[in-house]
Length: 112
Image (cartoon, rainbow, N blue to C red):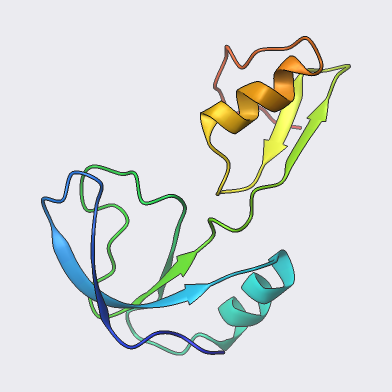
């Protein structure tokens, strides 16, 4: 699966930098196929919209998997539960939720 040449990446705060390859997943199938093909000792780290302040989205010498194209939003109006892709912003979630007279007010893990 194609990745970029090593490129310099940083967190949103621009404090830390590292060189890494980048793979852009366009779909869940792309992601699964890429994950199954990883043979690097540094592995791969999934990233969303590059908005972490620290170094949590950096993988020096490894690969970053860009999931920002995965921006689907599925909302169950009966339960108010939303399942979103890594590329979804809070703003996009709010717009989608308001169509169901909902508003994202609680952020927690729940066994579904």
